Image (cartoon, rainbow, N blue to C red; front, side, top):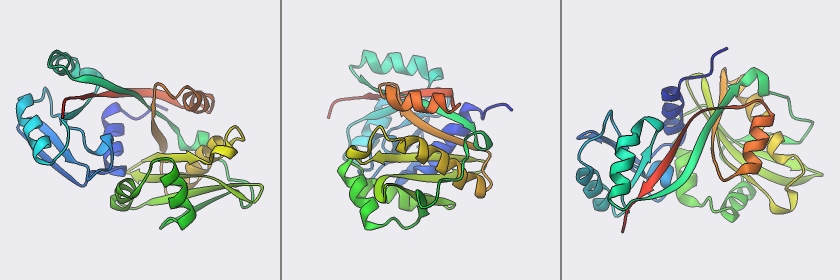
Length: 238
């Protein structure tokens, strides 16, 4: 069973973690993230892209630092931005696997899918830096979507968010309570997200993970997820 194409996964990434506003103009897809982080604020090229100065001006007009998201095929643009002094940020992998391969019904009262999120879920996200602007990103995502809350020993252990774009479900915003780490919460969240996604009719579960997050990458690879594509950011001056 062939994995989804990179283009389908980038489309799902944008659809399930959407910007506040998106505009396609002059060779660019421009995103206004509303403070929701790099993923919803970076410009990306349409084809070969266009005049970098146009994208820079648009982002500054929104009150944000110029930021570009670059795929493997954007090497010429990457070099041009590097030459302009843009620094490289967050090399990231997009991994995927068939839902049927990952899905496992969670043990009794160990994982719940809930939307809108409970106050305790919001608190755990906030403690991990996922504050109101990123919760607004989740609110903007189209259905089907759900928050996930994991429990171990009758205590809340972690949270996540999953949403779908066609046959692809994307897992986002996984946050494990610090005292609950190294107790299998990540695996429970991954398998439970796939179980939820299968019930919604998804064929694939995908996620984005930074190359620097070696522990999460090992977990996902051990579950059978494969790297399909990758991206990184280039950030300019204020």
